[in-house]
Image 1 (tube, rainbow, N blue to C red):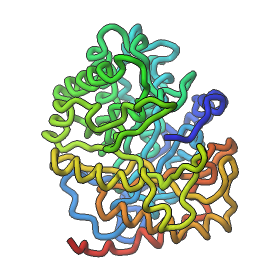
Image 2 (image 1 turned 180 degrees about the vertical axis):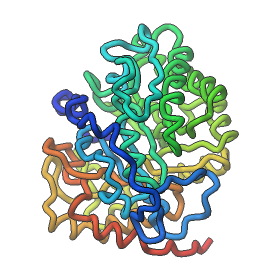
Image 3 (image 1 turned 135 degrees about the vertical axis):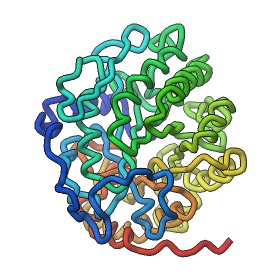
Image 4 (image 1 turned 120 degrees about the vertical axis):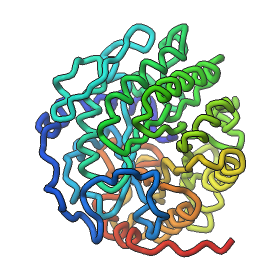
Length: 399
């Protein structure tokens, strides 16, 4: 995400501490069996989404991002958003799991007490399991996609552990992290575990270190394939940051890692914001014709073609798409959000023709401005509009 300045991250990075989510959320009973949360959609999670039929309406492909700044919305109530979105993408703050440590000096313990994760040791994913269990109840018909990143003391595009923090053996560090994650989330059901989020730091040697980290995750997944795997966001075109190439290209991920995802039917992620640059500033295209030809947005379609041509068994997702014509650091008014919706919905529909899931960024605005992403929250103003789109049949493609 291109969305935050470093000081903002420091202000809100601890937004999802244990106190910010009631402890009884972790033990709240699930909705009664047979509860209907949307027309013809039962509340019981599907046994296997991998074998799910082809999407008929946009609902089947719609997801939403829930960030660490919006964790107060994770209540376990399926009525909140599951009539608009089948899927949810949640940001896991890895520094919470390590409880002051790092992969180079801490081995995480699995947390398997789904009824009350707070019984698990501190150096585990207990805080996130609380939220993932609640998200599973909130979005019973789709995937819970977990996007891990490091926020405390970090800033885009270096939202991950450094080589020093991973230690001299990144493969072993990735293995230990994934071993704990797969044991923790496997029983939740229909979880997609992403290997990283936006790990695009230009630190020398970082690309090779993260390939090793991913190989460790793959080793753990071979032992315990209880969750589906996903690659973090990548792009097909060359991008630069502060005058240097950003290592976010599909070819910055080693072919053997792509091949494993192809073998197991995993996922790949792309961020397709309709952003343009003007005299060094980032902002969204002012209308559909302008937004759909922005480089990030167009890049998705070329990226998707590359993935399918080389790894046809990998499913593709738009991990983030946002649209707002409000100025940077200014939250859009409800009237402005409604006026933007015709453009936003057309962008979403275009992406849904190609992607298996499209995650909107993000569920709700929070009090802290997010630069160009200020005002990108869709609830509550656009809930009814999104529900209308969700129930719309996806037109057949004319190839």
